[in-house]
Amino acid sequence: MKSRNPDGGADAISVMHVVDSAKSDARLAGLSLQCGRDGIDIVLIVLERLSRSTRPNVVLITGEKRAEFEASVFQGGAALLLPADASKLAASDWQGATELSVEIATKPTAIRGTVPIGGLSAALRYLSQNCPAQ
Image (cartoon, rainbow, N blue to C red):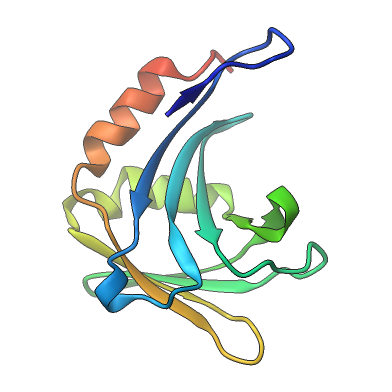
């Protein structure tokens, strides 16, 4: 997805992977890879607004590999920005995976889901080629 910046700056560019609805809570929409300030950002999109003051713990699993991160809530509580280490995993460990299991620690119950990530290599390559120079 490419959106023009109304202020004339760099366009916003992102690639979205939507959840597998049969394996996911209705509160999780998907995974977005987008051009960030320092490279490609990994963002989880949620349909349940979270408080911007929270820093929810997020567990991501591909195959036998498990990673845990503290996320930052932004975009009015509808998105969770993962730290740069998640981008490093997307560029390496996630390349051979077909799906990503997600668990976001929220109260009273966690948000869980599965995101098909086939084509992740092509998405990262596209973003690398089209993100504004850092």
